[in-house]
Each structure stands twice: as C-alpha cells, then as structure tokens.
Image (cartoon, rainbow, N blue to C red; front, side, top):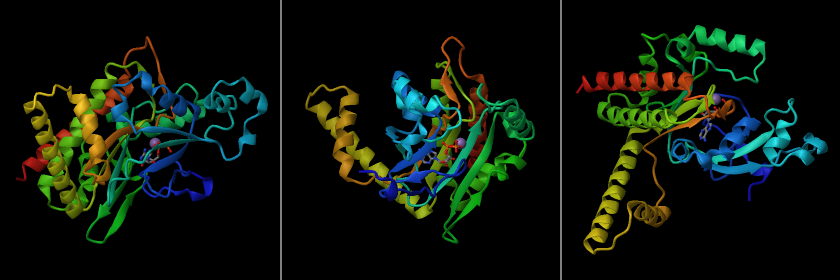
Length: 330
Ligand code: ADP
Ligand code: MN
C-alpha cells in the first residue's frame, strides 16, 4: 500500500545524494538508484553468503513518470533495470525498496565509511575519474582504502544530533583517523564498557564481510560500510537487556527440545523462534551492513575485489585499535 504521497524524506542519512525516502511506518527505505544497483540486488540470491551483510531487498517502485522510459527501450528490455539502463541520461530514476537499517533504534547514531581507493567504475567519465582520484589522494581513501563519508551522532546531553558532513572525514590522515571513531562513540560519554561491546561487534561484522568478499569475484566502487548503534545510553542498555532475555529464552527452548529428543537442525529451530518473537518489537543494539551498490558488479574470472578488501582490512584495524584504547581505560 505504498503510494507516492505517503512517502517522506528520510532523515537518517549519514551521507550521499538527496532524494532518499521512507514509508509512514519507517521500516522501509526508498532510494533512487542506478541500473547497476538494481541489477546487483536482483542477483543477490546467487550470492547467498553476502545476503546477511546487506540490507534486505524488498523490490522496486515504478518511476514516478513512466513516460521517461522510451517505449522502444522498454519494449526490448526484459526487466525494469534493462529498461532504465537503455537510457544513459536517466541514471537514477529507479526506486528500490530496502530494509531501513536505522528503524529498530530510538536514537540511531550512524557512520558511513566509504570503501576503496579507486572510487569510480568503467562508466565514469575521465573528468569524474580525475575528480574522485584527487579526493582519494588527499584523504584516507588513498592511504587506507576508506574514509568517513559522514556521520550523525546522537548527543543525549542536548537531545540532538551532531551532524558531520562529507568535508569532516576529509581532514584525517592515517595517524589521526582514530579521532573520527572517537567522535562516532562520543555520545556514550565515559561508558567505556558499552563502547567496547559495540566496537567488538562492529569489528566482528567487518571481518565477516571480508571473509565473504575474499571468496567472491566482484568489483564494488564507492560502496560503504554503514555502522549504526543505539545512541542513547539508557535505550542501549534496555536493548542489551532485551537481547539477553531473548537469547536466554531461545537457549532454554533449544535445550528443552534436545532433552525431549526431537531432532531438528539448528536452522529450523532458529526460524521457529524468529516467528514466535515477531510480536515483540525488537530494540536495536547495533547494526553494520554493506550498502551503496551504484557502482558494483559481479566479475567472474577477475578474482576478489582487493580495492575494497584493503579498505575493509584497515577498517578492522581501526576498530581493533579503538578497542585497545578503550580496554586500557578499564
Ligand atoms: P548514495 O549513492 O547517495 O551515496 P547510499 O546508498 O550510500 O547512496 O545512501 C545514502 C545514505 O543513506 C547512506 O549514507 C546511509 O546513511 C543511508 N542509507 C542508505 N541505505 C540505507 C538503508 N538500507 N538503511 C538505512 N540507511 C541507509
Ligand atoms: Mn553512498
């Protein structure tokens, strides 16, 4: 029941183009996208190990002005993405519907880390390649393979967001980039143990992304790791408590099942649990996913995406370093 006039501007973007929308419930994110991004999401089922690390893809919305697609192009195309790909001047008039990664949070604190030293794909003009290379060479994109593209940090003291725009992340170099992570967690004040818990989870998810992409043959230029956590310390603690209770319930149920001799594989049990818990609104602790596939494609035969992987490895190092610093405070 999604109608164009029920959509509102999405207010939790940390970076990127304007024009991102959300639905009235706030669970969906509707984003103008390139044909490449749609093709990427449409082919994701062929790469099931990556699926847990990207937002759920729920489909497309028809462009608001279908007349934009010339009938000849649309007639030859076998999919919506091909129809739009047929017209180079209309690069972003497709709308994809994704899971909104910030939905389960009361006050989401958000960090967008843009990955890669090369940030352009084969479709970019020479002018664009040079422009993006110049930015990369002047920032940690070049030296580390990632940079802070933007942040929104909830400040519980003022009950407002601190917004860090795209210029903020460009000031850092290899030796002071850690300050960016400190700003990301700054809303938690001196809650060192909460910071450690979150950073451990982010590190572990980044490692999961790396392990999957080491086995894929893909090229993702200018994709991002999006990190989100519950920015209110009080709400974060509540979310952790709820998580612990649900984990404990799940453990008990599994144990009971095992004791009664019912032999189900773990996956099936997980599915059952998921369904039963559906009516309890889950509070978010943290979330980290790979996003922005405007310049991503599968490249069989070309080996893993070292441009992206170098960035992810250095992101792991960054969170590792932050963790060490926090642990030293305990
Ligand atoms: P762009 O090509 O404009 O950079 P992105 O896919 O990077 O497009 O989206 C822009 C911003 O929107 C991101 O920095 C992020 O903060 C937000 N965003 C994108 N996808 C999601 C999502 N599925 N859930 C929540 N926020 C998202
Ligand atoms: Mn982006």
